[in-house]
Image 1: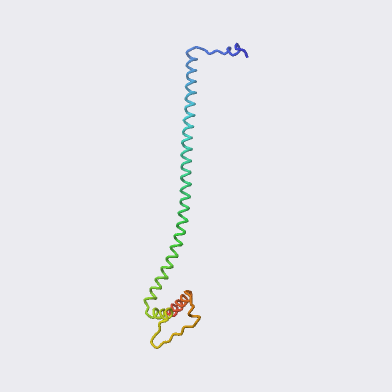
Image 2: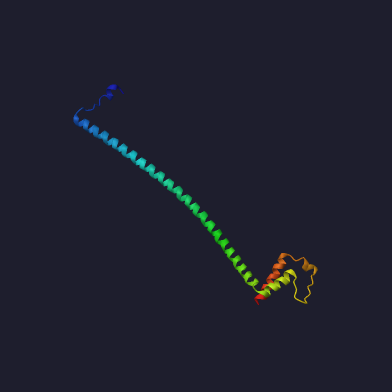
Length: 144
């Protein structure tokens, strides 16, 4: 291409042409401004959406941890309630004089007047489990 070929297109220097060219430039600048503004708004919206998504994820995780803690606490509370009920039953039994007397005779070998206690070799080696079973026998006798 020659320089002569590129100079074949000439712009008009009339006021109308200048006005149209300035309108075109103004519209082009407004279009660029609108695009930039739209891109900025999209970037801000994307940033807000990401931040909110992260917050929701963290809250979901925290909520699941709290639910696990609640389940453990409820189970532990049920165990403690059962233990409290058992201890209340023991307190009720310990208020009964006959039960306390039977318990003292079976555990500590106390005797009534004129009663003899024979300790057998096997019974001398009783463990705490055997003592607990003796307590259960006494409780069942008292309950009758």
